[in-house]
Image (cartoon, rainbow, N blue to C red; front, side):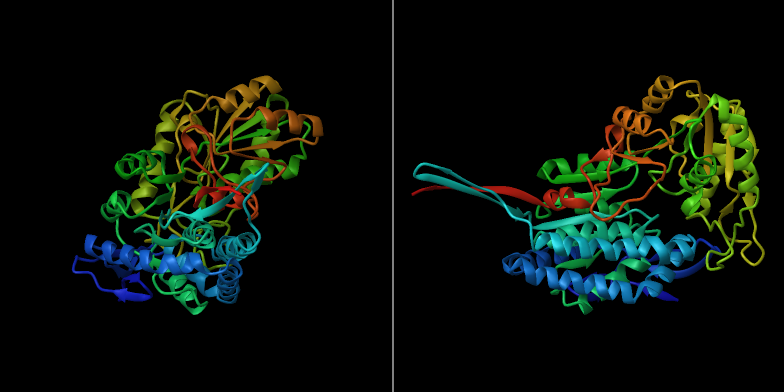
Length: 476
């Protein structure tokens, strides 16, 4: 049985606390024991981070960029190893992890390597007076990761932090500890100095200690709305900067002038990728009245053909969910939707694939005859469950799409260029996709409005979030 230790200054550190189980979602087996970090281990990581950060920030930006590029190269070389670990962490399809999720982490390091070597401040002159501004690092930053994309989330947070000259402490989700330690090994191999990246394992207890630590300058969280509120409250005493990428209940507006086959496939991808465990998924499918019946029939036909099972099997189209507790929660949400009057057109039941009977599998699920006030339409389910609604015209679709406390993502399916721009402009969401969904290249910001969060991951905005502006005034 593998023991998972925290990594501080490049070295594994044993914990005196009792370990807890790491379960492989695809089989239900215990595959490792996780040793939770203590407050003393946190203090040790922060002290090492403070010491290493000053030297790191003083290095020329092109030297930092060289190391970050080394990380990107090594991640690409070890893509299959990281992808297999992510499958064991999450239970998602290997085909998803190896082709998209893990490579996106390497792409983040490559992008921020180029950005940190070229980003600059401003200069101003007024007669015999002048001033200039610089973006300076915050110091020690920390990231609290989600379990659905452990490699991507860790890299999206660590890459801009390190590029800006900070040190970084990662607390991965207790559900997904395996990939974090692999990343720490890769970072060290790439030449990242000891102390700049540490991994602290554990649950909300060490997470709260990180938020309250007075020497940590910034927290970046990917998680649920309730967790985001806690992070803000716990960080308030020391006035930490925070970036919060939280939940969503995104709409996909399917107009009757769309590419029909593309719209059907996009709706399925936007709900069943990673077993629906994606915060930006478009789980509210609004279909124009004239297209509704045909669209639903096509989705049911394609969904019925989906293969669910062993995530390492290339024939599968959906893998396992993260845990038995989460599976039971999603199944209960489906039952509640039926009780409220939704029609279960397909799925909604637990599956027991051959050879994987103890894993956490569920049928991809389609609910129709849904109304805006139903819990399945209002609340984030975070599973392979889509709610289908219909609308008459553009104004109605936009008003109902915006009638939510969330604002992370939104999608539009139309062949009308004017409509695409017009509707996108009126949707209240941090990210809008037209005739596509959930595509986030490294230079594009990702984040939400309303209850879906504060700040952005990716792009120059993320780099700026790990810095503060310093203005220097000179009397010549």
